[in-house]
Image 1 (cartoon, helix red, strand yellow):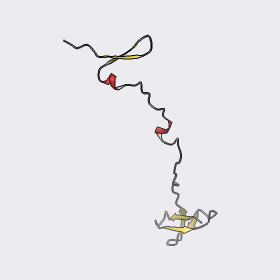
Image 2 (cartoon, helix red, strand yellow):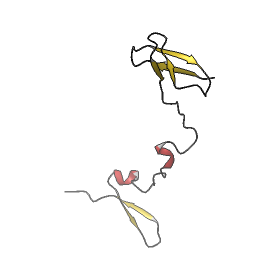
Image 3 (cartoon, helix red, strand yellow):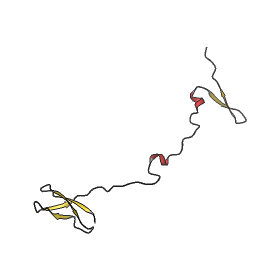
Image 4 (cartoon, one colour):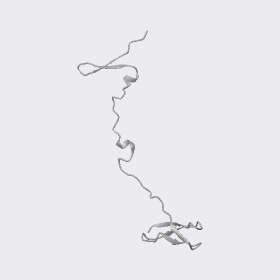
Length: 93
């Protein structure tokens, strides 16, 4: 059986009571004898498994974005055979 929290809006008294699921949402306040209501709280939610993180749905980064040779200033050219050649830039006078 769950434990519910009740609060009286008239006198501010709050208490917990262990009741069944079919219990009424309003009770009589034990201090002022007026109508008190059940306090609702957000349920705890735990997301398990894949697909809940931003990194789960992203595609892996391409290795062609920037290679270490491009960041050092060397230029890459392709020949007719499809092989890559790395040439150093000409020195500036």
